[in-house]
Every structure is written in structure tokens, then in C-alpha cells.
Image (cartoon, rainbow, N blue to C red):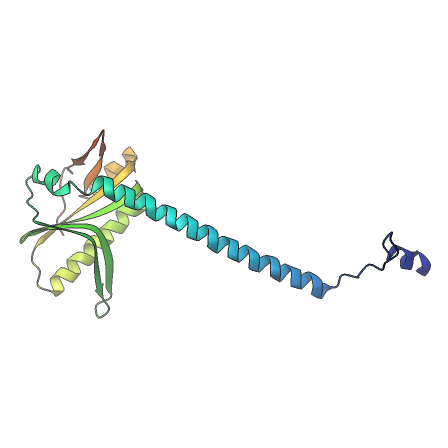
Length: 188
């Protein structure tokens, strides 16, 4: 192509010259797009996080309120129910949160609440129970600690796995909730 044709092609049909796009222009636009994408991701994560918290709170509101009464039918007498109990010990590197903690002078039940339960959640609760036991031992707390998992959706395989690990299962049952007792309840 001759120089005259190149100069001609560098003009718009209205006769004005077209700005030549440089690599710097492309890089600046790319940075603007990346920044906008990160801001959108933050906004979406905030929305999803809020929705997830709302659903989690709904599951807790459905499954936790009548637990002392339900466990009483299984021979437990819990006098105190704490929601969202935290254990933080920087000195011993023990940090965990319990969604519902039912207790009396000799026993305590740590309840983890999930919307949908999976194997990783069960394994996480095993670790949580071990932390609770370690913390109790450090504070000369000789109570027996048991674990339960409450969930609105539990597939049969995960339910069997959790029961095999010694956890009580709390699940919806019609307009109520029921507790399924493991064959051999584990005490931490």
C-alpha cells in the first residue's frame, strides 16, 4: 500500500484524523477493565455473603430454639443455651466458634448448624470438638462434651458419615425438628 493510501485510511469518512492506538492506550484500558471487574466481584461477594448469612440465620432459627427440649427426650438436661459462643486463646492457638452450645455442670453439647451438610463440614466439626476439648482441659473443665450437627439439607451418605463419627443429627421433620442419635455417641 502506498503512503498516500495509508494516510487516506487514517482519516474517518468525515475527514478528521483517527487517533492511532498505542500499546500504552491498550494497557491503560486493560487496567481500567481489571479495576472495574474487581469492584464488581467485591459487590457480588458482598451480596452473596449477605444472602448466605441470611440463609444460615434462617437455618439456625428453624433448628436451634427447641434443642434443650429435644435433647431432654434423649436423657440430657441442659440448663444453659449459648448462641455463637467463641473460644479464642492466642496463647494456646485455639480459635473456634460454636453455633449453639448447650450445657450443664457435667455435660455440654456443641451444635454446628449448616444449611446443607457435606463431609467437609463433618470433618470441620470433629476438629472443632478437639479444640473444645483442648480448651476445656487447659481450664480444668472435666465435663463431657458431645457434638451435634443441625442442617436443613442432608444427603443420606453424609448423614451416615456424621452418625458414624458419633454426632447427633438434627434435621427438619415436617413442621418440627428431630434428633437422630448415633449408634455410639462420641464424647470428647
